[in-house]
Image 1 (cartoon, each protein chain N blue to C red):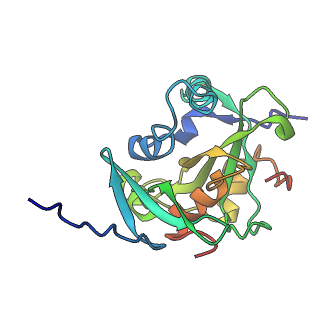
Image 2: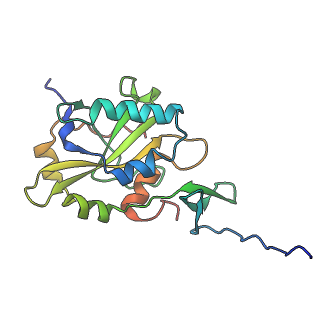
Image 3: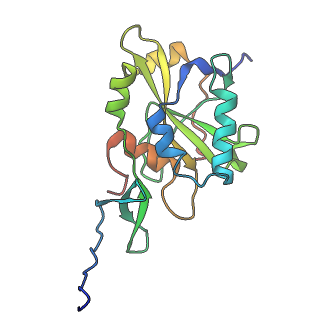
Length: 75
Length: 131
């Protein structure tokens, strides 16, 4: 019996793959190729739905979180 | 100067987000251990947490307006903290109370892969900054 030829699937940016039960996104690797990044499975919209929240206004942030420190440019 | 820290009761660590962000890390690695230790110290109502606003438009292309970050490990100065939590500041619809919902955890300046800021950007906007 002859071996069956299997053509590997070429991954492109935007694909999603599953390895050992975990999902990965295919993303650019900054060297012209692609690499795998653990997928983000829950969106902000879904988090808002689950927690009953919406975007806070700047005024709400200033009023309720006066201790919030300003950006430091550290990244 | 008054206490600039925020009560831990304002933080929300959604199980699915925690799984996306922390369970992806090798168990026992420094990044994994630091995440667990930081959450143990800040993830309860009486905790006091230093939150710093994220750059609304950073040089790496991320747009994180309305977000804040916590440097990890907690006790080191920012320039020496390799990891961070990024949280979205949201208001509860029922009473307007401000909450900080975990968006991402990871390396701030990785040599490979996405930074914690890029992952937070994707969770917020549905794509990475360069996509």
